[in-house]
Image 1 (cartoon, rainbow, N blue to C red):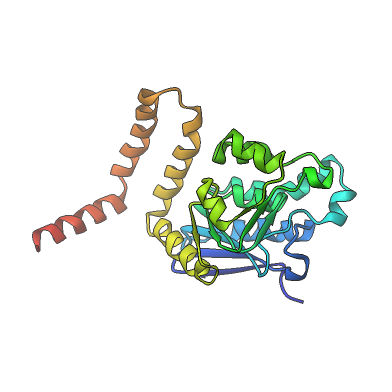
Image 2: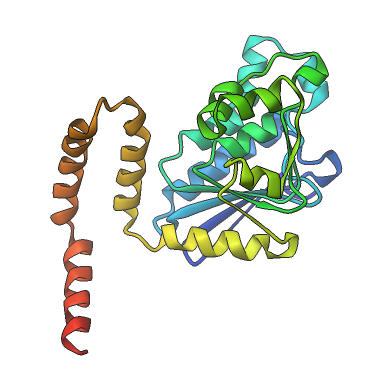
Length: 251
């Protein structure tokens, strides 16, 4: 039997692939456990500077497994949520490579990542109301803060389903690419994040997360100043500055 979640590392990028294609990679408790374990292993790996999350074709993630969802109550729902909440808590830069349908909780998994790339064949479908179910897992908060109130209402209340190109136009994804080009595009973008000093990228991600709570520009300056002073004292800064100065001299 194949693993429910496959993990690989290439050039500093860890790729996590949900691997239950017959069930369209629906989130079961077993898959959530495997996903959380994979994230912990990659975060503890000193060679990993960014994480890509995707699904085995043909889907990205069809949401919570309906058989487990129907029998769930509060604790059961929170256990399912933990898959995408674990992604949202990751200190490492995360990128969703949405290669097919992202439905309900599967859409939450994509929304929990820092950046989303989509194949043209991707489908972003909230589907909660169509199932007679209230949105959960912070779905409305995640969606509205990314696309704004009107687009969120169109998708949640009016059942609008966006393909990759429409998702890019709405600002739901950073970029839409041809289906076959998605893995390479995700790897290339993630490699840029992975090329930064590991501690620096983590601290910068923490700063980005804190910005919605910052009152004004002056407060943002103060918040960034402490982190920038810290970075000035890091050996990676001194090494990269010296290398840049050497290149300038050799021109």
